[in-house]
Image 1: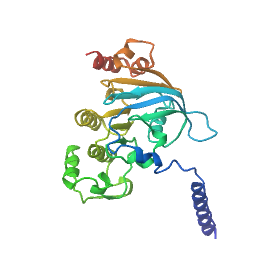
Image 2: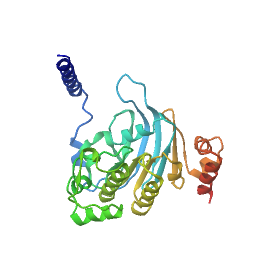
Image 3: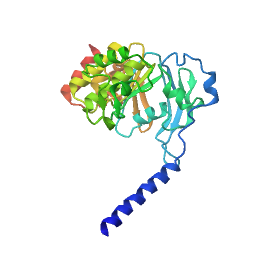
Image 4: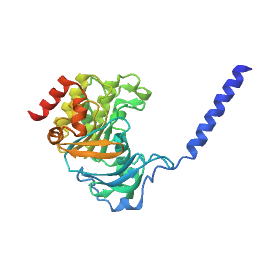
Length: 294
């Protein structure tokens, strides 16, 4: 009887969760009328503009970021740093419209992302790609995981698999969530997917936080060699990965604290970036500064 009561309670909880999901606001239109006005080759560039953007995760909550403004030029490599809860990942969520802008606007390749459908924003070939911190893969073959929309030839898929140094065949099976692969291998599979997509804007949300240093170095090498001309926005876990970037965006308490080249930020001993570098320890800070000044 006790077992039956427990199982019944668990089943009722499942129904409750389904009902909660049914009442969630729709995240955005999959398609919209403005999509027809987009040029077929949009996006042409990887430019990104935040204009006085404020956003919250849901109504009733305080703003996660406030009046954030910055411009990213095509082909620039931008590092995003800040302490936990500063709003770094919120910027990523806004770019992909996982949360909507409360105030201001975001322009990607000259187009306000709120005026287009999610399919156009996320699904355009050569548009947006992301390598998240926790890589999640759906079940299926390697071929399906790397090219889910079957846009590319087998030879192209095989080429990117070899490029990321994985010894896999197209027909090899991937279990739910990629459980039959290590975290590093899952990250490399997602990297292979991005190589195939050739995005104009690539976002890395602490993508190498859970992998070893060797894999991290390999990923950074691939980014430098194979994504030339692609705009890269990296939320940094290891400062070493962004010391040679074009500019660093420092976020603090939901606002932009500074946005400049690594050298200019390090020249200012009172800057947030300079303090983050010094906080890594005397030897590590010296090595990081050496990477910039040399």
